[in-house]
Image 1 (tube, helix red, strand yellow):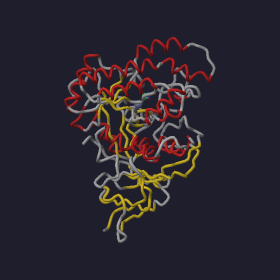
Image 2 (cartoon, helix red, strand yellow):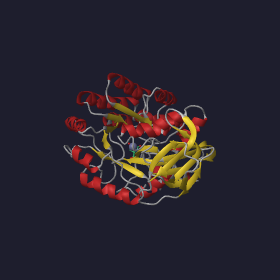
Image 3 (cartoon, protein in one colour):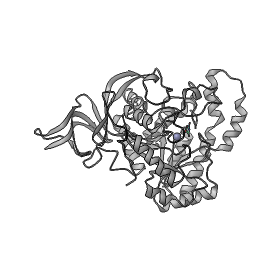
Image 4 (cartoon, helix red, strand yellow):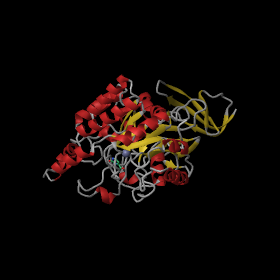
Length: 445
Ligand code: DOR
Ligand code: ZN
C-alpha cells in the first residue's frame, strides 16, 4: 500500500495507553494507527524513533486579536506561534474590535482566519445584550460555541442582563450549543480595585494585591450564576480559566448534581502564583495553595482541559505600571513545553496530558472524532514531541508579535519537534514548514 506519510517507530500515546508503532496517513486522514505492513511505501517517511507521537494538541482558548487589535497579534503570527509550539488547532475568542457578536462579523472573521492561519481554527461568537435570537444563525455559520463575559475584562465587554442571559441560554439549549463563561463579578472587582489601588507596597507583594483586587469571591459568585442558569435552562456550559480551589469545588459539586458543565484551567494558574509573580492577567493568579488544589482537580477529572488563554499585548503596554497595564499573558507557544516539563517532573502522565489537551477539548467543543484522537478516519493532526530535548525558554525566540512571556529564562525538558495538520507538516525540527492560509474552519459535528 502507498501512503502520503508514514510516521515510523514512534511511541504512540493515547489517553489510555502508549505503545510502539507506525501511523499511516492518506488524503489528510489517519489510515492506520499501529503497525504498517513492511511493504508499505509513502511519499514521506518520518522516523519517530525515540519520540512520542500524540494526537494533535488543541488550544481551545486564544486571543489572536484579529481584527482590530493587530498591533498585539494577528491570525498569521498567532497561528505561527501555535504551530511552533506544537498546536494543531486553536479556538479564538471574540473580544476583538469590533467584537464578534453579529453573523456578518463572524463571517468576516472566518475570511481573515482562512486567509492567514497556518493551522486549523475554530471561532467563538460573543453573546451580549444586542444579539438575542441569533444563536441558530451563528451555529449555521460555523460557530464552535459562545462566550459570555459575566464580569468585564479586556475589551470592557458588558455582560448580558439577567433576562438576556436566560434567553441566550434557553436558545443555546434548544440548539445544543455550549457556552463558555468568563467568571468574574465586575461590581466586586471595582470595589476592591479602588480599595487596593493606592496602597503603597513593595514589588514582591504586587501579585497578592492583584489577587485581592479581584478576589476568589468574585470568581465564585460568577460561577454560581452560570451554574444556576445551567441548572434551570439545561444549557451546556463551560467555565474558562478556573483559578481557585473554590471554583474547582463548585465544578465538582455541579458535576455530581448532573449539570452539563466542563471546566478549564491554564498553565499560568498551574505554574505561577501570586506569591512569586506580579503577572497581570484576569482573573488573577492566586496564592500557592490554590495552585496545588488545581493540580488535584486535574487529577480527579474535575478540571477537564487546559488551554493557554494566550492574550498578547504589546511590550510597551505590558511595561506600564501594574494598575495601568492591560491584563493578559502570552502562552500559545509555551504551553506544550511547560506541560511536557511537568510530565518529566513526574507530576502528570503523558496519557493524562493527551486527554487534557487533545481529546477533552475536542469532545467538549463537539469536534470529536474528527479531531482529538489518532483513530483511523480522524484528521491526521499529530504533535510529535521529544521528551528528552532541553530548552531555555527565551522570549526573543517566540513567534508571537508580543515579545513578552512570564516564562522567559525558564528551563524545560520536553519539546514539540513536529506539528502535523491534516497530514502536512507545519513545523518540523523547530522550523516553520507550513503555509499561510492552510488552516480551515472547524465546526462542531
Ligand atoms: O487577562 C485577560 N486577558 N483576561 C481576559 O479575560 C481577556 C484577556 C485579553 O483579551 O486580553
Ligand atoms: Zn481569554
